[in-house]
Length: 494
Image (cartoon, rainbow, N blue to C red; front, top):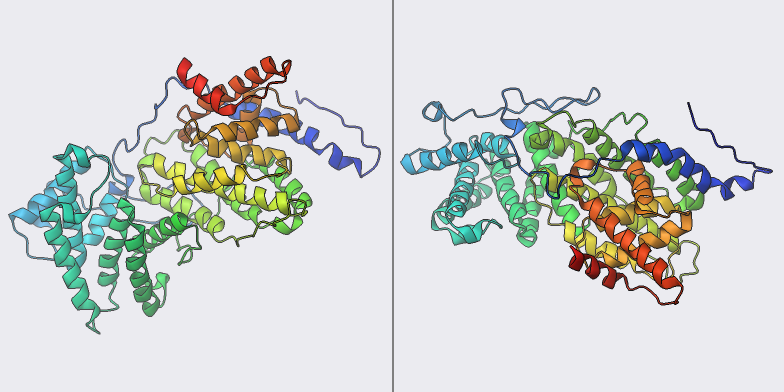
């Protein structure tokens, strides 16, 4: 039976005064419904488990009635290497590198591996950069020091040989009027951009991406490329660079992206909070579309819990995340007023907190799918600075601010999380929350994906409750609580 609660409103002006009470009552059941059981152990989720969905015979991207399915051909090459048509003359060394790619793929998942091999087989320059990557990964397998981070090509003589061949071929073709705008050349340069992105060399990434953009612009834009996967991959890489540098993307969202998602009742509470935000900060309403897009991603993922292949379906995840990244990164920057008494001061600070938290949230999803997220630390650092701005009223739509601080705090490590805990407790006091579980219920009711939690919310709850307990014990003596000390005490007890 529904649990009704009546609020006495004598005149229209009283509605805003009761808004927090109304919102908390509405979201109470939502938060309970989304509350997950306690994690069995930290680190329960395994990254890169299984094999890429892109390697299946029918590579249709997931359920979306309103978006066109994207079919990617896959080279089922494990027993057919001698029957494939390669873009270069093959010898035993080259065949061995291709065999390594196929054999390793049976035990190690890497996002976009099989779709990219398909592209690499279509062009000689692209195939050479593919062989360079294969040689690099094969070297990593035998070098324990290179296991954590993919090294540069110049650390491996064999990889450097294929890299040099590819670079020389691209240079020649760029000078050839008949080749300089070919789709094969686009594929080859995309291979260089992909490598730069995978190792986090974003200075060189910019050089290669600018060259790639010039070729694509001469061809008439991204949509003139014939390969749906190539369009998707270029957009994905572009978004990776834009997220790292916190700038607008170079390219529009390509056709085939998952834009229309029916969230059902999943976003009901968020919609109510955004309505309050629009009333309190009417000139900052542009953040609403970014928040809705992020919530749509969460809703889609939460409906894949019974799909064991979802986290290795790299193409679908790229199609899903792309529009949300685009919405967030396309927002215009808003300078923070110098005067904290400016009516827009707290709203602009909160808007940027929401934006950075959404980027942190999507970066965590990228990490869960086995892809790198070099931008994570940059956005966490930006959020730390935002959370420490003086005289910000985090009570402006406090529930949204609570969500943003919880999302960012979950990706932090102690003692960097100390200031977040202090701010979270302050927001809890503003809206009358007494335990960390109440705060988590609110966050889960807004935008949440359990698959990226992996026990992090439990650790954060422990630190929040430790701070609350220490605060209560010391209130009588009037001794302020140092959140850093609370964090370190928790670590010592652990």
